[in-house]
Image 1 (cartoon, protein in one colour):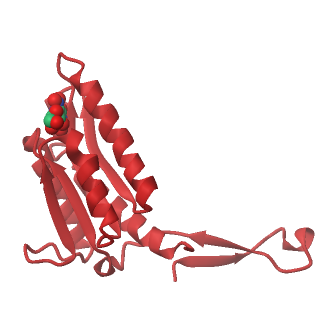
Image 2 (tube, helix red, strand yellow):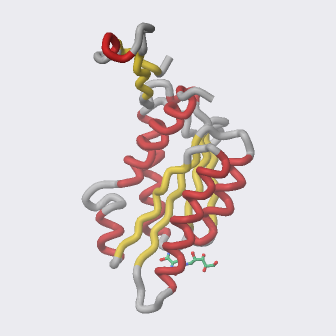
Length: 179
Ligand code: INI
């Protein structure tokens, strides 16, 4: 359903058999078919709760049931971004979700702790997606200041909204791709 087949312009040059180029794209219209897991860090929750509300608003406006009793969406809270990959891994491996969204905010302080957390969450989230084959959206802000984080979590724009869109796109794209 998600594949568009175009006649290949080089067909006559390439082969005697007609060849076709398949184009796969995610969709934003069939969101009711997706089950979505969200992992949110409590650390810097002034920021992460705003990312979550922007993300849920986007999902809701695209047809996802975000009501508290929804069977389409689950939200898991973790202490900090460092813990995100472990829980994302559990959700992704459960077979219950077509896409997992991770939300966190890592803000640079005066110690190297920032670099450790950023490196672990970034590599960890990428590894979960590759290991499970389930798309995992990287919605962890990494900023120098709280002001920068807040600007990206609702003061100027809310990147949580974008992460919701990216989840819809990746969840539906993976479903459209050949196994
Ligand atoms: N966790 C964050 O999500 N953001 C941060 O900015 C942060 N800083 O800077 O320390 C942070 N630390 C906590 C870390 O994620 C773990 O929860 C903690 O180390 C326990 O494992």
